[in-house]
Image (cartoon, rainbow, N blue to C red):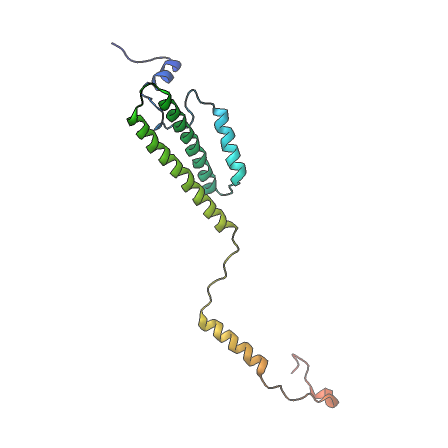
Length: 166
């Protein structure tokens, strides 16, 4: 009776048994791919887009993962065209995944740019009703056009009360 692999290496190897193309893998970087290249891509996108908020950082991560997976699909497409017999079902599957990864990349990019524009935009003026604006304008016009007060009698300065005096 077999109970499966017992060592860590055996378990790691058997976890990859069902992987045929890696297009639906939860792992971003598959065995045989260079993790340093993925990290280089991530850092380049982070540097280029300079995310500030956690949401912006998540969107850049999604872009990196989508692009990495898209490149995997493109490599598989190249391999499919190099084979002796052209597998049209595999090419259709690869095309579907490529379209999805491209869409994910550009949707994340579009959302990131929108969030960054909103964050960097000047704050909007608060809402002021037209009625309040009109009242403020009339009050200002009244102050400007009001007739002047009585002329000051400079000869009898004592008659002019100092502010606050009673």
